[in-house]
Amino acid sequence: MVESVRIGIVGAGLGGVAAAGLLGRAGYDVTLYEQAPSFSRLGAGIQFGPNVMKIMRRLGLEERIEAVSCHPDFWFSRNGADGAYLSRIPLNAQHDRYGATYVTIHRGDVHEIMLGAVDPAAIRFGKKLVDFEENASGVVLSFEDGTIDTVEMLIGADGLNSRVRETLLGPEDPLFTGWIGHRALIPAARLSGLEVEPCVKWWSSDRHMMAYFLDRNRDEFYFVTGEPAADWPRGVAWQPSTRAALHESFKGYCDTVQAYIEAAESVTKWPLFTRDPLPLWHKGRVVLLGDACHPMKPHMAQGAAMAIEDAAVLVRCITELGVGDMAATFETYRRHRVERASRVQQVSNANTWLRADEDPYWVYGHDVYAIDLNA
Ligand code: FAD
Image (cartoon, rainbow, N blue to C red; front, side):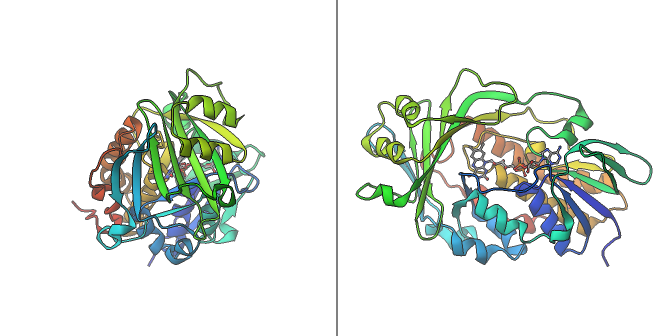
């Protein structure tokens, strides 16, 4: 029988939603608090490797996500200037070896599908956590709208600028990496006559462009770049940008890349942040996951994946080890996550992933449900 414990999750990003869905399916009393009044379909794509899709299987969402997403057979890395191939990495070409599908999808679509795995009555929108205080029996949460709520366990899934992390560890700005990413959608109709591969990364020594389809019908193409930038204004989440700025930045790249830029709809630019490894992931009744504890540059397309893997391992620890000794349960979770999340963070920040031929099995073949929690 499931232990009676009231669990609060702050942040309904991909990590928080995964945790809420898995806890709900396991029969726990869970409430998800999100500061946004609602979610809109922002123009961005996301890649979910087979390591994530195995968790989507447990959420009962694997088939729904597969039905609307693109399933590239390969990840190609190509030289930006002349298009020469640097690597050809099997994705769905080795589907059975990895144990699930590799999908590329619109971020808004997959977020909506994942929200569908959470009981609507458990989601509270417009709840911005401003403070919390732990006492002997629980954690008292204070929200910006003046309301309070009490839970017995608090999961901080509130992203890069986590208020939960800040309350545990004190204020500290995330580190600007000196990199930004441009993002743009391209309606496929604008690509006619152009060479289009479903999942390709164009590289040069100090920048890149990652491009892929967002849907099964290949109606929407998308690119996200990584480029050096001297600075970024504090507190600004993103800025509008232009095709001209991209042409300038990718001067010297081949005609195909220039054509993608020309075909782009509205272009935005985003700062890329990281943090040094945190000295703790949990304290008392409070535990962190995802970008709240290990943000990274997105160059492995595994940031959300690590948040979702965190959620799955944390929920396994809660369900299999119980909550009687929360410190021990949380420490088992941290112990089984810290090495993998740190390794991914390191490779991602170095931006070397799949540039040359390598076997990505340690990432895509990973199955959080095969971990021996007692090891
Ligand atoms: P978030 O997604 O940041 O969610 C945090 C949530 O908490 C938000 O909804 C926020 O509104 C809410 N919140 C914050 N503060 C409060 C508060 N005080 N009270 C209540 N709610 C609060 N990852 C991949 O796996 N694949 C990719 O292809 C990929 N591409 C990327 C491209 C770019 C350009 C960038 C910048 C990132 C990319 N990532 C990718 C990384 C990924 O976006 C993040 O790692 C992931 O979103 C982290 O999930 P999260 O749930 O931890 O945090």
